[in-house]
Image 1 (cartoon, rainbow, N blue to C red):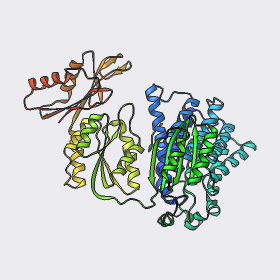
Image 2 (spheres, helix red, strand yellow; image 1 turned 90 degrees about the horizontal axis):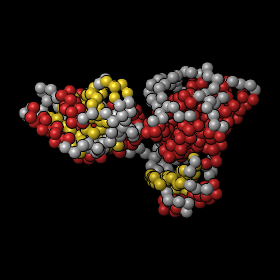
Image 3 (cartoon, helix red, strand yellow; image 1 turned 90 degrees about the vertical axis):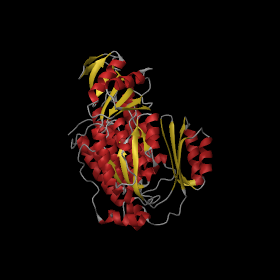
Image 4 (cartoon, rainbow, N blue to C red; image 1 turned 45 degrees about the vertical axis):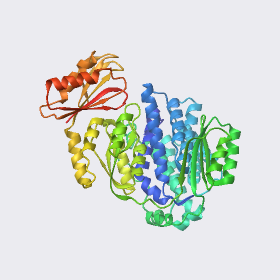
Amino acid sequence: MLEVLDAESVRRWVVVTRAALAARRAEIDALNVYPVPDGDTGTNMYLTLDQALDTARTEQERAGTFGVVPLPVESAALSRAALMSARGNSGVILSQMIRGVSEVVTAGNLEVVDADAVVRMVQQGAMRARESVVRPQEGTILSVADATALEVARVRSEGGTLGDLTRAGVEAARTALGRTPEQLQVLADAGVVDAGGAGYLLFVEALDQVVHELGTPSRFAVDEFTLNPSLERRADWSRDRAEGAAAQVHEGPAHEVMYLLHDVSEGGVASLRLRLDEIGDSVVVSTAEDVCHVHVHTDDIGAALEAGLEHGAPKRVAVALLEILAPRLRSGVSIVACAAGRGIAAVLEESGAITVASGPGHRASAGEILAAVRTTGSQDVILLPNDRDTRMAADAAAHAAEQEGQSVHVITSSTAVQGLAALAVFDPGASTQHNVLAMTHTAAATRHGAVTIAVKAGLTSGGLCEVGDVLGVVSGDITIVGSDTEQVTFEVLDGIVSTGTELVTLVVGEGAPDGLVEAITARIESRRSGIEVEVIDGGQRHYLLLLGAE
């Protein structure tokens, strides 16, 4: 059992929480009857944390500091990312709880977190969450968080260890959650506990699991471990009854409005809360550093935006119709594909795919891919990750979509040329199963390579490389190190072209030298007759050229 939490442990706490929300979000969604029975509380909490983690990871990768930044720096970055990514009421409140944790760490410049600091973090998170809500309601996540904060403080005052207080926090959260129907009549009528409070219980349980070392998942993984079930299937938590309650007609405001503001003063935040409360309900206005996140349910979208304009220019404006019934899925199959460049995306879209920007430096999160899958509105979706490092996020998105009734088939395409080849054999008139088999076979049969420039020194399968060396990649492995781009490209071609090759695809990236494509085409034509060469202006970064041989 841990006595203190270091940067690795805190990071694992957040990752375990995300995994718990991923595993239980459909169940939490089914509990969602307050303030609007729109069945998305678990989804919003999961997507908020998923996107925040992805943003923080991407920023670290760009800076070359992934996994090594001090805890105060990392916690502040995650807090800001959570607010920027917050979705819905529950997502904004969750971001404020993360803000509370970050404030304790950064205020004390803590490299490790002991039992006393954990008490302060739980208290600060509960306080920040409550102050962000204009009309706090008992029987919600706020009540559960307050009860947890009181209990961990009591246990610590009696000399409890870190393990004692996290275990007590779980029991306090579970007990408070069970009381929510007594505090809020709409929950009692539906026979459920509060959905946001259920999500908070997972947040506390994840901390307890890390402290007691019950799981050691890899950083930023989603399904690397098995989570112990925490939401007991009791009668008063019935999913069936919750779904029945969610079928009621929503009689409140018609729209959910969200946006971001920058550099709003404390007085400005207070006045904005009051103004939004006059024109709508479910008002949550929260802050992290220089960012202010606004959430309101209202019938007057213009008034909600005008209220923000008094304090700055609203950014990332999102307006959603507050519908409580899930949209009907149409029959047929749609394609969702990840694209590393604008040119690649254009080709994929011309073939009928919905694209998600994803590539080295900014790989798509599970939340971004899930949003694209939902956009199709199709019962069946074929998903092309087109990148080996995006496969895990694609699998997580597929699992989440399947919980909502969509059937998602992930094709093992580890590079853009494999995805393009797979999409070329897609037949809209054939069955989904036929297309999945044909596309999977084609992707696997497409040999692939790439040419890039080394950005750091290291040891590769092709030998030592220095910054600026030209690297040749064959089937995902760096096997060639050289100084001449043309020569390295020729060697990559030799590694992927075989006697049965009929088509070579060249996807040209940013920074490709003038004349390179012409030289490659001439080389192929001079050495082999009957091979067709297809050139695509991919516009991808990092890779001068992506090559495929079919």
